Amino acid sequence: MTSSNDAWKHLRILSDRESLSKDERTIIDRFLQAEYQMREKKRIDHLLKMSGIKRVKRLEDFDWKFNPKIPRDKIMELMSTDWLQKTCNIVIIGPAGGGKTHIADALCVDAIMKGQQAVSISIFDLTAKLAKARSVYSLIDYYARIKVLCLDEMGYVFPTKEQADSIFQIISKRSEIGTTIVTTNLIPSQWGKIFDSVTASAILDRLGLNGQFLTFEGRSYRSKR
Image (cartoon, rainbow, N blue to C red; front, side):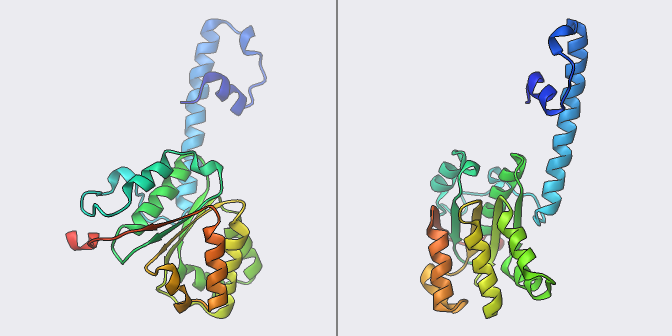
């Protein structure tokens, strides 16, 4: 919870706090705390609405026991660090239904709960946006500036040469300013199936910068339903 002094600073209260009586400070502190929390809730609700995440997913909701081969230790180690304060890339590789999107979305939700902008978009939806965009540059610039960007389901769509170049530009521009998460059913050596070899190599090179490649193995969670 935010301290009273922080709330006063955040809400730009100009009065000298120490000049007020104890009872006056108590009343104002309670009001400021409530006002600050309301503003933060509205901000987080807005970030969630803009994130593209259809259903909020958290790590504590994930069934680790169903697939013990999923690298839980590496994921929890990442979450235990101040991962939003440094740029990093996370590539999650595995078959359909293996929990990749759940973990990726949980990372995005963690970022949002900490007040950072995060967006999750499938490669299918991204290529559709690129195809319809009046200004491709503006779209690239938008996704390049987001604090945490998840590019979901890479490997299920074959981008055009122009779209592949735009995806590379987004990842490249983000390499020093934000965290990029990619989920894919393809191991790196297979990325030449969806991009030409030069583009695939360039994208992997950027993602490899401060990057982690996590492999998910095991049964599909969808088979539990």
